[in-house]
Image: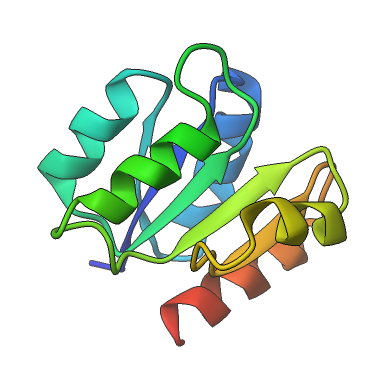
Length: 121
């Protein structure tokens, strides 16, 4: 079985597209959203997290802050999805240890390239 990736996003259609692309490339994918995300992440301890920044309730910034406080999840690489340009996201997240940024809309190959890079494969 491939590496385990958790996709955290409140857009069900977008999640389904990402899930399909990643699964067809051999990855095991779990999806979650909002407040449930932290609980799900702690249960499954993924190899990589794909995280939407702008979600109602618990947004991507809050999720990352919590991940960095959790000794079991602090080392898990995070790729951030956003409608904002990569340069702005890099500025906003600064030294938070983000493995990558994907601006929406994105090209399917960009997603796969970022995932491979973050997983070191």
